[in-house]
Length: 250
Image: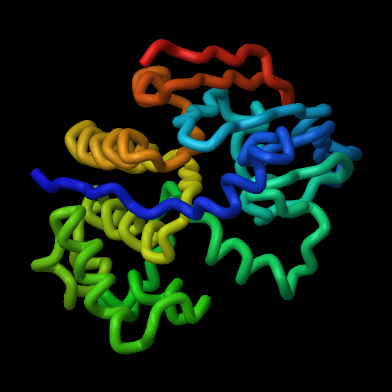
């Protein structure tokens, strides 16, 4: 087993959000429609949502419920057709494409279902990429930081391997290490266990549980009721709308 220390959160931006009376993440009247051959398809229908610092939120729903579109609004991977998205006090819906990637790299950690690791560079080089892109740590410190995170997820011995030499569960643990490399206070995960077996899913959720305990804000999309139970708050979606929002006792 491995242990995860308390990470330093971005206190200034969390304080700014709190002082304005808003959550760390806020969606206001968000609608999203996609053009299709048979007309516009409404993926989100007037979403209002506030998530506070330190919450662990699961967003659950069947395929087509809008849960992935919702998380894509928060990350800026997609844009709302109307409404507003605020993260860390930043109006994400107004950012230009030239601003978005750098803002995302500095403020968010993102974990995808299919890992999104570059297959032609080593595991440790994959983890270093966000630091290189955002110039977030001195060059001489980047490899040591990447190795530290690999050690935290129990994979330091695999640092020089290509991602394709690892199992799916190991690749997802690498992806989690990469998502933490710029020390974001918000971690967003889209079906992080959806491509894993039961044992690997348990390992991955153990990491998320520890990160939440250490104060990380986590928003996780899942289709699994069992996985959703790890969260302190469960939001259920259906047909582009939030149909329930349950806060659970710690």
